[in-house]
Image (cartoon, rainbow, N blue to C red):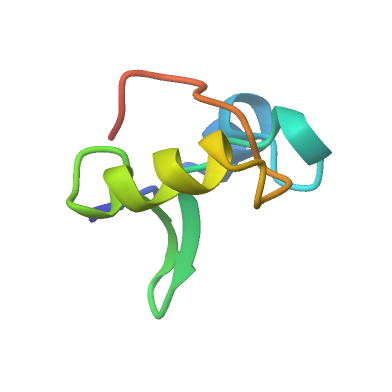
Length: 64
């Protein structure tokens, strides 16, 4: 998991709270915002999007 320390990045790129525009890989961990795109969780989130089972549908960057 990739910890995202830049809150401005989270707001402008990951877009939490923007419905389908929100990045599907964005999670909140003990230490703050995290990106799961470059982890084994990627497949899980991709499957959920394919089934239209989650609100966050975005794929907003190359991963962190």
